Image (cartoon, rainbow, N blue to C red; front, side, top):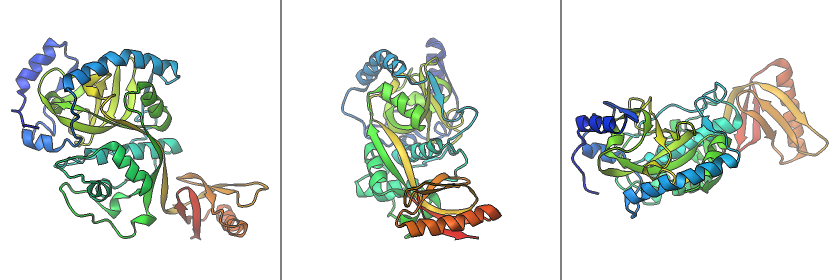
Length: 367
């Protein structure tokens, strides 16, 4: 796509005033860049359809879909940053000068789902966008200039999994896969996901049930200057396609709440509210994640509960920061030996290290 001249901020302020000031603009991490540098930070291929027509179709369809969503039982609002006073989101990241937004949106969604579905906002998780983009994305042909697609990223996260940030820290720029060789022993794996493009009812249901979803949308030049309010496109050319994690919605304000990857000095602390039906956000590509399993060592944990019944190899432990985990079902003897060790650790309030293999405790070390 050809690079257009930068949008004049004075003209933007005038356009916003004429539109009734639907949102606020200002200097951001993106307006500090050249137009070429801004475009690099987009990373979803543009569809062939006419963008204005696509956006209008999304707006027209929203009224019907929104009514269906409410009838289906989704709450009227949800915000992963404030669920009964608890914030389940992880920190805002900055993708830098690379069109890797799909990796960041996917990781943000996985992290939100991991915490929310476990009911634990303090889980120490930080997944590797670098492995997702520079290993699995690169294998699929993705580069910083071409971008990628959420459905392909989630398929990789389900089949291969991704490791944690400390095993492959992110830096912006095309590179060879350089992940720690031990990554198969420290990873997060998507258990199930679904393409829910165009289904607003499913979008709200996924968000309120699992915590977050992936979504792509058309970015116009005025979006770079967004600072607060409910964004609706008012002026400027199409800049490209972008991916974010939608972590909430509000029927009163008629908007989605999204977590972006342009750093905390863009938007409202890194977040944005996007109006329903705007910029093809419901119809570009939307994917929902149903769960995330983990494989890693859990260090310095306390055993707070134990449970079993009359069935063989059906023994569970409540781990202090991770919740209920099943002990290895490989044999009744193994489960019984682990149960004895953990019961003693619990009685003495001794910390333990445990190896969680996608939801099952396979190794126990009492400190």
